[in-house]
Amino acid sequence: MLSTTRGQLSAICALLGLSLAACSPQQPDAQTSTDTASKSSATASQKPNKTIAISAIVAHPSLDAIRQGILDELAAEGYIKGQNLTVNFQSAQGNTATAGQISKQFVADKPDAIVAISTPTAQSLAAATKEIPIVYTAVSDPVAAKLITQQNTPTQPNVTGLSSQLPLAPQLDFIQKIMPSAKSIGYVFSAGEMNSVALRDKLSIALPKRGMNLVDIPANRPTDIAMATNSLGGKAQLIYTSMDNNVASAFESMVQSANALKLPIIASDEFSVRRGATAALGVNDYDFGRATGKMVGKILDGTPVNQVKPEVMNQLTLYVSPKHAQAQGVTLNPELLKGAINVDTTPEQKIDK
Image (cartoon, rainbow, N blue to C red; front, side):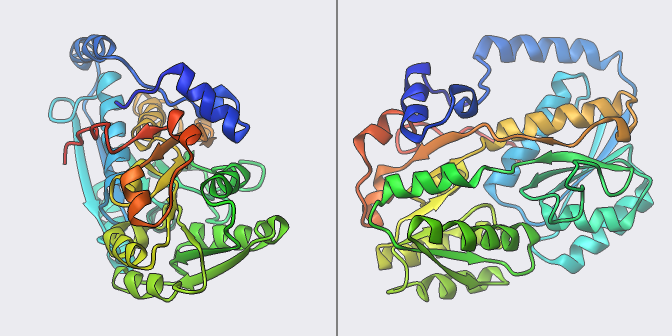
């Protein structure tokens, strides 16, 4: 896991006006991990054999880290893949029709629980079954996706999950810290992803109140990302992206175009910064997976899914890359660097594929 000192976190929290609790990722130390592994093996012999199915709309580093976190948390609770836990993972490779086929196959297989990673996957699985427990994750707006109501009640009794409803105000504060002069914000999004559309709508309301305008460009396929990004040239001073799966699956194409146009990319996850973004303020993906794994573990232990309430995780971590910032024509505030995880110098956490 990546680590940040409490002093660094205090600095960035003060800079963005957030509480320390809101900024702090959960990072276990090496001894804790070793102790957890020992306890897991002992507990596994006491747990019954279970089967889970996991699906994601597409494979990319952020979703891979979430999946790893889920499996690691389940192992810590005594459900170890290859011992007493059978795991069936399928990626839809960005194709909604394939997501539907995977959903039908999962329902036919009748696992003990299904984990839906991303909004399109969760919607597809929810439409396919009202009996098998479904735990959604990596869903930024479950209300817009019609997975839960405004009162945090699931729209069907077999669904629960963890969402990343990142507060928009700190994101916009962060953008203005990176580039105070920016007046036009570029946003490339998939019109077929409800979470991306919902964010576009929120940005279109929030940005004018700050003296900025939104330049939104739809890109419905990964192959459209480069062209959509190029179309921002001369129209936007900065690009904001937040876990659109089409964008994430073709992120290097966006980076290449943004570098040529000298447009800084501000994201909301660690791996986008590692792959070329200037900076990100968002949830730690691996921690997000661990929190999701706790919910799945409760269900495997026998808790009815309708007694596992949907939750929101919005602890924020700041990631920066001075190298990528330079490539995109911006210099990062030294005060910002003091409170951030610098991906140029911090090794990436290894994820088992």
